[in-house]
Amino acid sequence: MISVLVLTKNEQQDLPECLKSVAWSDDIHVYDSGSTDDTLLVARRFGAKITLRTYGENSLAFGGDEAAHRNWGIRNIPFKYDWVFVIDADERVTRELGAAIEVMVAAPGNSVAFSVRRRDFFNGTWLRHVQISPFYIRLFRPKNIMYQRLINTALVVDGPTGKLNGFLDHFPFSKGIDHWIERHNSYSFFEARQIIANRTHDDCSNWTMAFFARDFHQRRYNQKALFYRLPFRPLIKFLILYFGKCGFLDGRSGLTYAILQSIYEYFIVLKVNELDADKVSSL
Image (cartoon, rainbow, N blue to C red):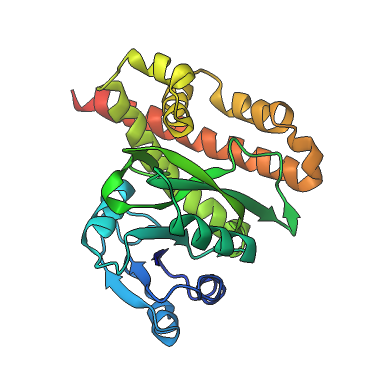
């Protein structure tokens, strides 16, 4: 009753446990963007169907326009079922979540998509507090959704959304701090490009959507666009995560994560400035 879509790029380390956690599905698709390790061998060993599609700068973790890549996948991959659950290789579906997915799909009501609560872990600690939001839409009918943004995509849903019980466990530091920093360094370039693109499509209605949109995900999408207009964003992000979200309750791991996120935000600021300078010099 449920198809599973796993997005991969050089995920031989994390993919086995991910695929084990979704073994309840008989229609698992690995959507690979150019792995050079044994990711595809792992996928075949688990009996997953494989779709290959490279895009952008293939040497990067994500090569640009991630939304277009994801939209292509959900429109062109031949899923067996009407409902698709999307997961990354460093994520795990818990037993409770797997059971909730099956129950909800059997009787979804008028909902066309469902969000799940994700638990991020660092050094064995659940980062319970130091998150902007732990909820992500992962289960949906493909015909009712569309991804937006070059990186760190947001979902636009055409129809009502619901919430699932259980947790989706996420291990973003499974490959070490170096890998996290390298990946977010590449992310920051595309975030900077997205900010530049947003400037050319400035819409005052964003303010209304950011605070009054009925759908939580629409509010979050527009709040993020507004956040990028603020000065001193790295400091603001640290204060929001560590104090506003009570990240200090997550101990040393919470402090480290808040610092890393503020550094990532500073990468974005630097690259926006660099793109602005390049634009001026080209005139």
